[in-house]
Image (tube, rainbow, N blue to C red):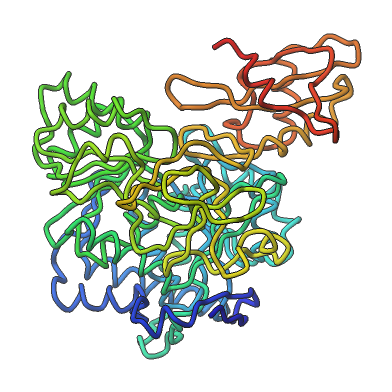
Length: 540
């Protein structure tokens, strides 16, 4: 039975009462796990990033200082803290502090720019925005100055690892925190919203996925139990900690499973090989390009990465041969595909580590702690095992809804299953194989975005009469965007198209990599663009 209520944030929460009654939710939070780690293993290294090594006791101390600073700044239970950080150690105590202070975490991937940030911070009603002052070639402080006036709920803009010229240094904010006894922190309701994370929607507007403490904790615990993780294990994490994968396995799993998180803020395959060997990482997770380059780099370095017990690959199309090559390249690691989404994390994991590893290459994993129903995409009628249809999922790890009520209307079936928008089939052993998607999204190396978002911008171009964006194959990243454009008669080239998009302030990763000028777009009888014809016309 689905129950609805609103928590302190004002957002609606959909929960299945049976999950609590059946013990599928533990009613624990990250605060509970952190206290256990500090009590049992205070001096054990929990996080490594560059030359920084921090114990559980040190992380907990830093988290308490941050929580005290938030409360002294007047933040209230249910307020949202947005952070757009690379894989830096500071993200770990920050995420814990947000729990201690009864707040809601809103991680934002570093690739997003003015347009995405303006939308997310307004929609989430964020009170705090935390970012590097400068990372790579982006000045986040200058960017924040451009969008801050359009975010009426924003109180604090804090720049991390900033120089003395910054007027809002994260380090000064934390240093100024008063002493707050732990009993003055807000008590945490495990059914309260813990996380709002934005993911691309087919309408062009990002959707704020809502998770509670219970749904996130269950996701992490299910993964720990499935993979047999225990104290002494270590994860090498190249995926962004502000993406659902990095968030779960770097910011949360370290406390829940008692494992070491090895962070890197820049993917360099040779450096990844060195860190995995030196830190004795026992598992890692990444998209297809990460695994491809890790295999090549480990071979070049003359190591088979003997500490690795398993490697999970997902987020984009994963060729079976790549999984087999990984299994052959690494000394003892099980290498397998996985499937999930921000709305339903870790829905399918590879076979058990002592099971048939070929299943890890030819399927996207075994459904774990979810009920799966494959349905006809049009009628919603259930289909039998082996039949292709839309994947719908129901389980204690799934989201409790979206931040905007209108986004929830088509997100769930009548009995509460999450509609993933992905197509696939399930065999009699519960292994899932993804065959395509019902949603019109482009998956660039695991980061999905909506073609309509780009189309809406390009429709404003004075020399464009019509436009359609479709996915085209890409050797390294899986997919990139191709723009099919009907011009008004004036000449258009790809550089001028990109210059126009740069003015909009969207992430560069969404820019089309190819331009096709056409006389007209193929249409259905109802006036929809037949994108399948456009995709088929790409000779790549």
